[in-house]
Length: 397
Image 1 (cartoon, rainbow, N blue to C red):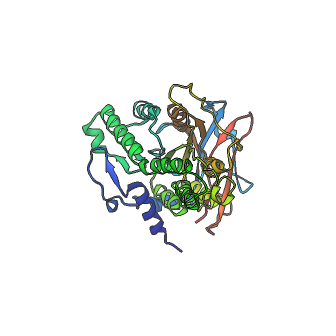
Image 2 (image 1 turned 60 degrees about the vertical axis):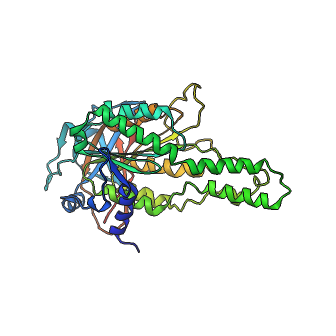
Image 3 (image 1 turned 90 degrees about the vertical axis):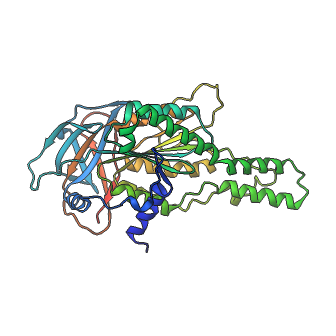
């Protein structure tokens, strides 16, 4: 069994292993400590008061007039007593209600950490608009920001904020992002070209069929999702106090299926060493709100596809659904939103807006036991038909 520190090291490498700050000063992985001051105290407090970030919508409108008496919280189907409710806008507590409990609820940590991960094959101009929106309308001076590209990971530092304007930082970061997306996918695009070239060659050559099969396997497995990395990623973010918002940009793939290979089911299936239920529990326990931004491939000049929140089902090919479904389920388990659009800007604008306002609910679990089991959380609003988003539960460790 791999130790917790080992998992965190994997996550740190995933986020920070090749990190470069916006001031272009190298950051060594060891310089970023996974241990945050007060983490153990907070963990002890969470054993008494469980924190649940809750977003309540009617349509796309956030409902901001709810009180403690309007909410019900269930743990494993058992109604719990709510100890505190806070209405938070961005990082400011606008309103609070506290029940008389002993000990009193822990004051909430509302510092915000944003992580943007781009698993994108082609540079899309709308990504620049999304980055502009991030810096102009979303980020505040006290927020932290990490941006992961196909090549590197970048971290915004307080030194950068003090020495450069938002516009300058945004321009530099967008330029780095564009460079990394273009040059980080050269091998992938080269494999696609080689496969198309091989597909134009006569099929009577057995060596050609073997070549096409080898190329297709490489392309199919180019994007490999490793469970270890996801656990390390979650454990790394778990140690950050405050609210964690992850935006995962994933671009729809269009892998050509060569003649002679279309009937092979084994070739069509991609290996994602993924225990989805386990990753859902880990992400939920780490209080990470994940948003999945599925980017459809649309030619420049065509009308944008409307951004919309997806239900549990989407008419996708089996291959595509194998990639889409795990991330959609992780998103649901963390209280985030899944969008599908050709417009990276509208997708980000919608999901970023959803992350700005929320309630923080605290409750003390009845018969709490540190047995390592996963406790399921269900939040209800007593009256009215609303869309309620929150994490699925926590691990009682």
